[in-house]
Image (cartoon, rainbow, N blue to C red; front, side, top):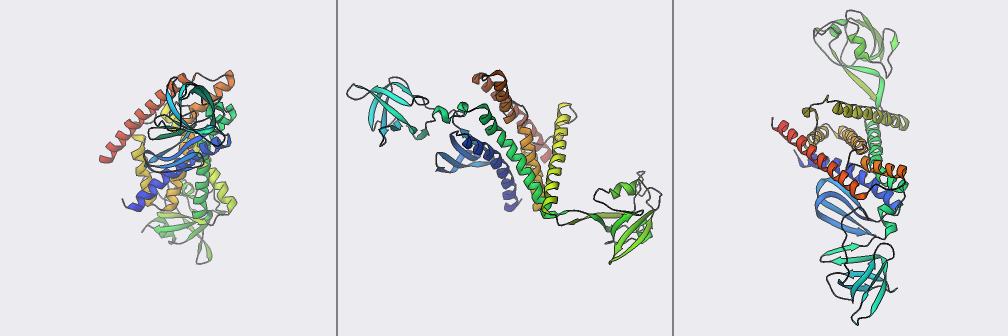
Length: 416
């Protein structure tokens, strides 16, 4: 596998993951949620830069991405009563930096504090006097080599309305579906749309087509007096006309002529064949045609995906029919070898699948979180966060177990 092919495979996965997380990110920002980090990739950091209040990072494993929203991440440092800390004030007299290890700045033995709602720190200074300092909304806590910006309650995910939280979660899968439509549109613009003509490819020696006088390069424009249309399935017409003469109107060197050919059961399958390859002729697509084709392909693929889910639920799918990360990598590599258009088409299918799969109410997926938000809307109060966390944790563990099993199966098929 050459480096270009590897790069193309990685690019497909990065694009799909990036778009998914971009949906979460943009709708979270719009709702005023503090996004701590937007990461492409998983594992150790390769690169990190801070713009505004958000860190943008690139990590070593390219197959994953995430957006960390305030209130949704576990990275919180607690300050305990009686703990001695140092604080640095800004020009407004507010605490801008909270030093938990370094005792620089103003030393305070903490008695009481609130870094979410009232935003203050109260305690004893070096002189034993009780002092109270307001805390800036963007104050930073320093602990060892970590720097964590505080998140006032109104900037946290949980403080937002159900509609805002629902939109922030829902946007990830929807962005994937939108990306699929765009990619299918791009493929149609690249390849064009089927015309109402079929070209003959290689003609088998001694076949009915050769005996009738059909030649490679002939363009079929009609059958039995009817003009071809995009919906015409000429293969079915030939197969269903076993032993029945077909009058084919063909264009050869600009001249139209009618040639009669009788399909025969060449392969002993009970279906008519004439012994020639058929090639669909494509023509340049207009914007409207490409858009229509993109939405049609999206609808057809969506139906196929749900049919696949149905087969899994009903047990009509064996383990060998499932593909995990290794299998998907192999298919992506095969698509890349077939050219840019096929790679883009496959990327569209993957993006659509990710979007739809994430909308399923399976614990640990976006669909499960949307279900909990919907229940909150019906009940008028949120589900116990600890119970919800347990459900997501168990669901995540089961998904990881399934992924491991499918991956092992992929690897075994690879070596077989």
